[in-house]
Amino acid sequence: MSKILTGKVAVVTGGGRGLGRAFAHALGAEGAQVVVASRNQTDLDRVVAEAAEADYKAVAIQTDVTSEESVNNLVQQSVDHFGSVDILVNNSGVVLTKPLVDMTVDEWDRLVDTNLRGTFLAAQAAARQMIAQARGGKIINIASNFGLKGIPNHTGYSASKAGVIGFTRSAAVELSRHNIQVNAIAPGYFVTDMNTEVRANHDLQERILKTIPARRMGEADELSSWIVSLAGTASDFMTGEVIVIDGGQTVV
Ligand SMILES: NC(=O)c1ccc[n+]([C@@H]2O[C@H](COP(=O)([O-])OP(=O)(O)OC[C@H]3O[C@@H](n4cnc5c(N)ncnc54)[C@H](OP(=O)(O)O)[C@@H]3O)[C@@H](O)[C@H]2O)c1
Image 1 (cartoon, rainbow, N blue to C red):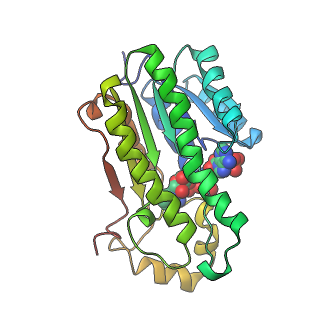
Image 2: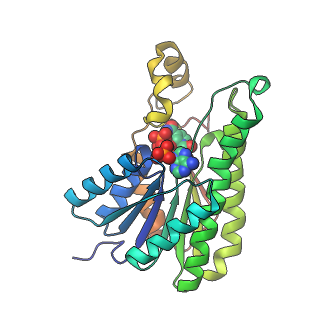
């Protein structure tokens, strides 16, 4: 029986672990052929092996999203391997918790280069391919609720994610005439390597949980169904939107 993403090729940056790994598996379970991309080949190979066990096709392409050459190679190799790029999940990201007055320029650049420049480079390369294919496409950017609210010690991260939201809205308007929908998800706290230090610090974790009406962090699978919806026909008349999924943290 055909699944909702059968015949589609999805590229997931940061697909080797954390949220991206869950997104890759969710897209594969709905019939997509999946390309996972990040810097760590061992992580990527593990996801490809898991995909084989789950009976969907995946390929690993080692990629640094801060490099234009590397990202262009990712899109070209995806096309060489599976024949098209129909869905891009722009998920690679890094975080840094540090007071503004202590942050170095290199630290700022690393946040902005990975989270914002990486989003731009991958979206540009994928959009060029989608336009050439002339059958539309879906670009899903993973922002953060920190891009929507004031958070101490996260200026670089917040700025980069607010940039992702602005980029999403403008790219959505621009690419609409090519039937490419561009939407963003803004997660709150989800259990991944990104917040290992927070979860290891009991007092800090308790303080954070008090700011979340749901009083817990999310699990990756609680985002995956939204990724699948944005990747499929459910989003055909929806573009430039930012879906906040954070247990209520932003609305309090
Ligand atoms: N977890 C949360 O609470 C949370 C909340 C809001 C938003 N987010 C966002 O969700 C996304 C996924 O985060 P996560 O929680 O899954 O974190 P994670 O487990 O630390 O994963 C981050 C992923 O990004 C990849 N990455 C980092 N730098 C890269 C680069 N230069 N080129 C290619 N890939 C790179 C990493 O792979 P390599 O290091 O191997 O390259 C890894 O696969 C990020 O954009 C993050 O900002 C997460």
